[in-house]
Image (cartoon, rainbow, N blue to C red; front, side, top):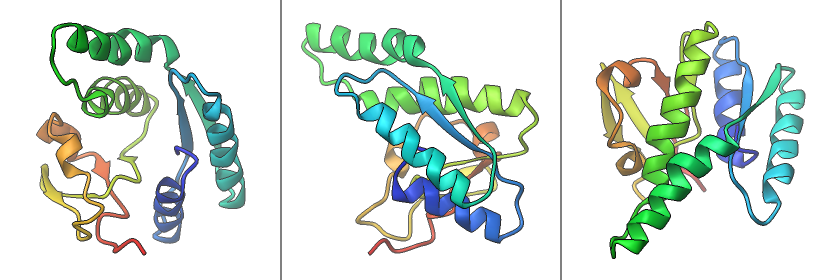
Length: 155
């Protein structure tokens, strides 16, 4: 849970559908201090939904795998995409693997995307679609991902 509306709505939708939901906030590298506020917002949302809440600290890994990638890319004259790298390395790498190892059947996010039979599809709301940020996901991962807001139009 990022602390934003989309991940909180995703958790609420899953709770409403009968899933046993656990909220997790991923602590990443943050320069402006908003990470602490985001974590608190996520904790409050989980409390409101009456579900367990945890914070996984991947700050160093984020620095090593995302920030370094971005700086190295800029130094080579490239235009790196840190969102894609964060999804690949942190959210659907370290976090996904840890959640599955801890017994989760699925990992859900507030991404605007859709998945079916191990394939990724564009969200219903094409103005909010985030499927293109998830292009590095493998079919085995996609089969264990839920995107509850992917069929919604965000107003």
